[in-house]
Amino acid sequence: MSRDSSATKARLLDAAFSEFAAYGIAGARVDRIAEAAGANKRLIYVYFGNKEQLFDEVLRRAMTAGAESVPFDVTDLPGYAGAIFDHLVARPDLMRLRLWKLLERPSSATGLEQDAFRGKAAQVAEAQRRGDLDGEMTPDDLLTMVLAAAQAWFWAAEGVDPTELGATWSAQRLALHRAAVVESARRMTEPKKP
Image (cartoon, rainbow, N blue to C red):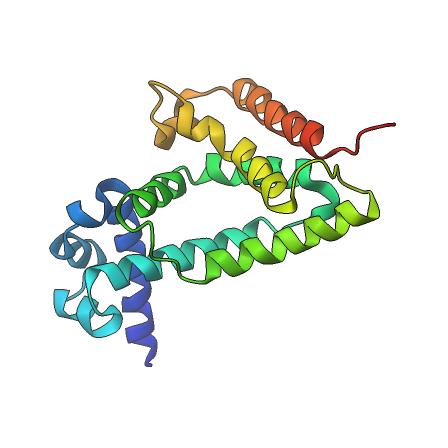
């Protein structure tokens, strides 16, 4: 692929991310994506296939970037939850994209999601066997709860546009919410004392 086509592809993916986060798959328009990317609409179909395949690629790309930005650390799940929170504060449109995926394509799994979760759950299981993490919950449930703690505030922030967090929330307020996320994850994962 030439450098120009790589740049065009990247612009299309960036524009598609914004479009899908704002409108979902059904509301997204390939005309708007192409216009925002400064590209011909036909190239979307050439590079990605149909709109659903474009969405899947946007989601895969976002997940890969998230995994690189927030590496999993089974030895510090509270810190991992805090890092996820920080990542979502910086990129609240990720939660909107994820919500659209759950609403419009719940059964379309890229494999990346499932493989990543299984790998993390296996590490949690091993840490539970060693006694480093609480063993009361199954590894899948414990990991799900830690992830839920990191993301819950973004789902439940009534009356708040998460895309405006940096502009409307004070650093102190965000720090208090982050501390609550980390403490919640710590309580879930810390081995119980006999």
